[in-house]
Amino acid sequence: MKGILRILLCCALPILLGLSSCIKEEPESDEVVSIGHRLPNFSVEMNDGRMVTNQTLLGKVSMIVFFHTGCPDCRQTLPRVQRIYDKYATEGVEFVLISREEVADSVAAYWQRNGLTLPYSAQADRRVYELFAHKRVPRVYINDRDGIIKHVFTDDPIPMYESMDDALSTLL
Image (cartoon, rainbow, N blue to C red; front, side, top):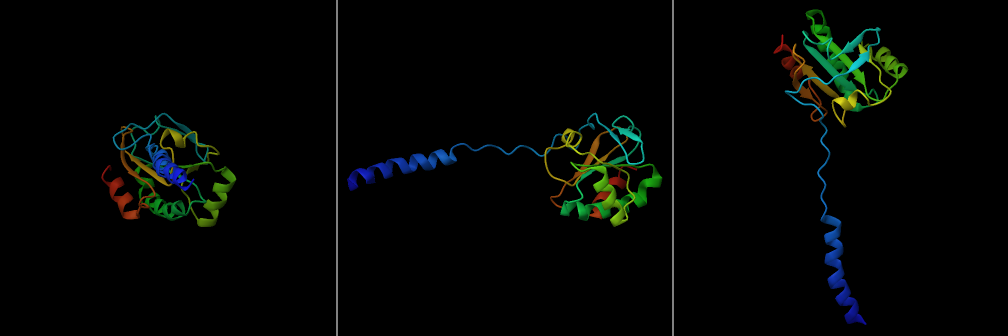
């Protein structure tokens, strides 16, 4: 009996181990669009009532930021984007901050608590976000006047003020 059990273990164990590791799926890419791509067709209503689309951004340098106020990395990034907004908003740069799965009341409360003045569009779903990416926030897209994505920043690493500032200044 011991001999039969030993034979079964010797034969079955490699097969079972092989089955657990033989299928290796590639992780789904985070990106839908990346550097060099044209902005996808999108439309959002901003908190001030303006409609912003990929078409209204043509002719302007723009920064599109996807965020969620409960995200620790976003909480580090948003004040840095605010500093950039304070520096460039009067120079014609269009800032479009879009929440990922977060309602307007939640975003407005966070903005007020943290003294943010950036224009935002609260999106309760992922419809607009998924035109750009599948996962991970924050996401910062810096785009030229032709609607071409020139720089992308994500949470790996969390974007620093200087990096975003340098990227934006090269397009002005």
